[in-house]
Length: 152
Image (cartoon, rainbow, N blue to C red; front, side):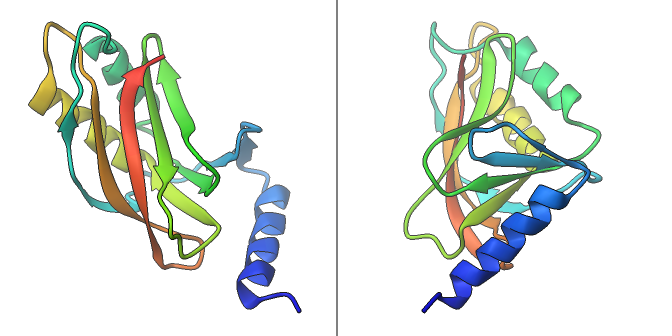
């Protein structure tokens, strides 16, 4: 017998696959164009800035590039890089146990994490950071998400 969660996931996956505004990267995440979106709550922050960290200017460019809105719907199957520019990348991993099969990360969540990381940890025009936050799922529950700002 198929569980209700699996049925809900299959229905959701079919909906995303049919959406004309979804862009799939083929790596377990889907981007949907929407207005500026916050899908996650407050985050912890850890300093990972070093000589090997990405350039602050490249991370700021990511924030500028995604400022017009959007949500990434991420499959709960390991670490996923969502955006990158130059030396800077932003990625997430949904931590177990998870309540649903996919988790949402909004553009404003990424912008806020980049800007706050720069404010807290900028060092010699470089920044590296990581943390944890709770983010919405397709079933309107929440999953814990680990995120990182790292060198490509």
